Length: 428
Image (cartoon, rainbow, N blue to C red; front, side):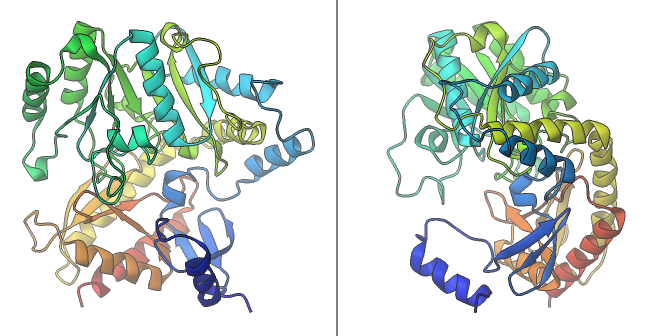
């Protein structure tokens, strides 16, 4: 008999432990904002496959587009026999680019692949080697993206040495006592002590740190970085892999700041659950690499491209950008109410643009001392209530909420009620 217990035993025997799994429940089916495991248990999904399902599980328009594409062809390799869905998607993305001027887009399969290629493009366009990233940032699990990621455990542990030419700055987080001025002083010191600006190809930043704890990059910081980049011929890369496609109340989060990047990495919710990623950039920069220098066997899968075109239609037709703002205000209002209770685990720092919402679990009310153990109790209690919930953060004490933007008001209210019960249960 196949059930959660038997599948977990098979998973332990067949799959290496390096692939972490949050919960020992196995999916059987999913629709919209809900999923069911093989034992028949129903869950409300506040994780969205780690921000992949902004348009929900199996959106009918996405599934219809995929089925139509399956009847035509599934793979040719764009570098061998190209196809229209790839070009059509690039055209749509170029029109959405969060910067002025002509844009070009190249497609890949995973977020890490997009970041790797953004680095390649930046180095080819500038002729420089250096890349500056931020502590707490997450950019992937390949060798270069591990080097860019600003967290050792579990992402870098046992995998060194990392590729060279990567430098990190402290990311401004008010509750940690780090402000924008500290970051800019560190950049000035970096330029004087480790690498001159003329050798830096790019600065890469998440407009809201994802795995690092859902900390928004202050507009003041983005403005200062843009000024430094302009002064020294450095490219600014916005890593929008987790923040993109309506999640933050804009198509791309960087638009909330009014700052224009030079390159944008995209993935996750681009294709509604199908593997697809890309880099959108200023046309002259994107043409820096030589023909053949970029690509990949599965890069820009026609099936995934068809899904992505449907996703963009859904975002526009269902006004998910506006919906993200409505959902975010509702969630933050509920969290603020729950935080006033005296029988929950202590909560702090409710934050996030649009529907990219998070809060911290702390040891005592009114302070910022992280409580990772209590955070784990919250996520486990949530699962017992029928809610899939994720934690994150350098201190492992942040709860993040990433439900589909297509969630109904009724299911959202049910999910928030389950979260409230979990916050109480974790304090028992």
